[in-house]
Amino acid sequence: MVDGGLDLIFFAASALFLAFAYIVYKHDGVTVADNEALTEHLIEATRYVSICVRLQVVSKLMLGRARPCSLYCLPR
Amino acid sequence: MFPILFAAVTGRAIKGWLTWRLERGERLGVLDLLAGSSSLVNTITTQTSVRTLSYAGPALVALWALSPLGGQASIRVMSVGNSTVQDTTPVSYMSMGNLTEDFATADDASPLAVVKGLYSVALLSPYRQRQSPTDPWNNVKVPIIEDLESTSFAGPDGWYNISSNNTEYSSLIGIPVNIDQSTTLTRDSGFSANLTFSMESLYWMLDCPVLTSGVQPPNLFDYLPNTTTGSLKWPLQGSGGLSASLYSNTTWPRNLSNASVVVDESKVPRIVPPRTLFYNTWDDSSGESGSICSIYTSYVEAGVQCSGTACAAVKIRRSKLDNPARGFTLLDYSNDGPLFFTRFSNIFTGLMAGHPSTATAMQVYILDPENPFGPLSTGQGTVRLSTVDPKLYALRFAQLLNTLWSVMVGMINLPQGIDLNIPENSTLYLNNPVALKTTGTRSAYIQVIQCHTGWLIALSVASSAMILASLLSPGIRLIRHGPELNLNVSTMIRDNAYVSWPSNGSFLSSAERARLLKDVRVRFGDVAMGDQIGHLAVGSYGDNDRQIARARKGRLYD
Image (cartoon, rainbow over all chains, first blue to last red; front, top):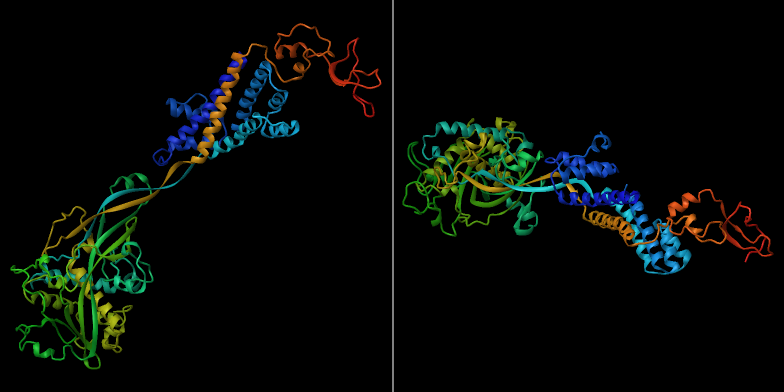
């Protein structure tokens, strides 16, 4: 049970990095002035080595909404 | 974060691989290598210590090398940088080939007042302004290409670059330009954009080989009328008085059109002899300084660069259009006999009124362009235009003529700018468009999200490897049938003859065994302490039937 949960967490965390790479690739060349919020999130995701930030960025951009995680782990 | 996650995921995967291979049966060297592979350094040191080469060794090293690489890639894959974006925008600029009808007749008192005002401003403007690429209204001056052709080399496609120290401008007045500022780039980027475009233009150039003390032509007075109301004797046309006079021969126009006003440009021959100008100015020694000049038209294409609303010509080349012969000038356009040049001459010589025996600012400009309204223009000092270098004389005289033409053409547009939406086919007195239209290329540096391909590939590879590794562990768990093995000491003492433990319980997982054995004391020591030669092994101690001594220096072991 514990192993299964860990496997799931590790798989999700690993997939986050790949998803983050994909998002950066898809937004290559996007104008900062037109996408200030997006840029801020992506920069935070690279600047702060936080899995929560990556989780929030990926969930926001891929699922269209932020996870509750963002309420406490995103730098203010 | 990435290296931590990578170590966790990969470590679990390698451990699962190890237990699976152990269950299936594998060489001990490979198993030891897998067991020692907990980091990049440990993987390398394990290989060197075991001194075995196998397929697993380089693969494990490569796998662990992805850990720092992925960590760096996740930070460096993205940045914010500058990027050049371009769009196009309509540009209108004043054509130098036109003229308002106000100057078609002698009834030009009102427009002349404007012309004189604008001309005076051009001459009165600071010297630095007159040397600059724009006029007092920020209009774009056209450089003289002849100077560049003789002093520098042309670049690709015949372009000459223009720098501030190698440029003489054809006129003190520039060309009004209007740029459409409503394009997307200007409106949305929030950054000032640079605009480049090419504009066709023309100016007059003079060749003045004859500068004399005394009037030109020497028999000028033979051509002048006896009365003030009479016209000049053929073939001379022009106007002037004692202070300045401008005459020309009448070798042109030559019946190019039946119309009374405008010459059909398409009928102009390919080779046209230039018009000859006789310009006489007041001279404090002989009364008159005379010059004989040939006048040509230079058709050029200027490359203009604008930063914001400030524009300047940055390169120039000969026009590639099918223009009339150089000997044909706009002064030849009117086909109403010698009258048009006479009117032009009358305006030119009457621009600066003054005492008949005092040089005007225009004449002083030829002597001293830095200070045309200086002492020389008020009768102080010596004014002898015949002493000026002929090339400089031609250049400055041409600048004065071109300035007047610019003022006449741009009487309305110079101060207030040209209308962007003016119809391209709108013509005035001369049969040329009032404004020319072109398309400018607007470039702007804007901040964009930059994805760095190299780091993107590194992050993708490392992340993919991590994902595969995260799937490996549960996958192996599915195909394995034995209990879970941890690479811990409780696993190490499985079925150890020196450990007091019931022979059953082999089905227990490492975790369960570890919990049950947590109070058993084990030691790697001498299990043959009563013999002459000892034997080192891991075993339990502390119970009644087994003693394991600690290894000692000096004792022999098998």
